[in-house]
Picture 1 (cartoon, rainbow, N blue to C red):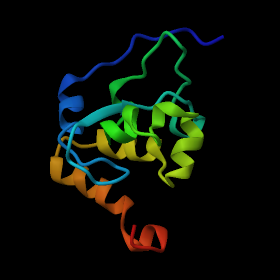
Picture 2 (spheres, rainbow, N blue to C red; picture 1 turned 60 degrees about the vertical axis):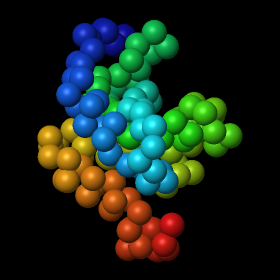
Picture 3 (cartoon, rainbow, N blue to C red; picture 1 turned 90 degrees about the vertical axis):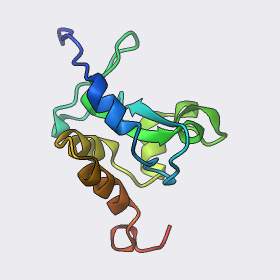
Length: 123
């Protein structure tokens, strides 16, 4: 059984996340730091329990519409399936975003998600 570890918080990192465009639609309005709860051993990311919140390094930018409010919001369905449908690996993105404090580098990681070379189309 996994022993609960203290949550690592970083208000500075979350503030940077909220300055970035939504990783789904590119909006810059009402950006929220969306924490990724599911686990993946490939990223050394443990599953987060019901009463737990993941470390802040596992957050990505989503507009309020895609995060909580819209008819297609991430909170409205299973997290892993929602991200697969968006064709985004949020753990890979979160790892990239937490590897730097430079907003331009962080934004470049998000813009790369929407490049024609990545997904074969112009989203």
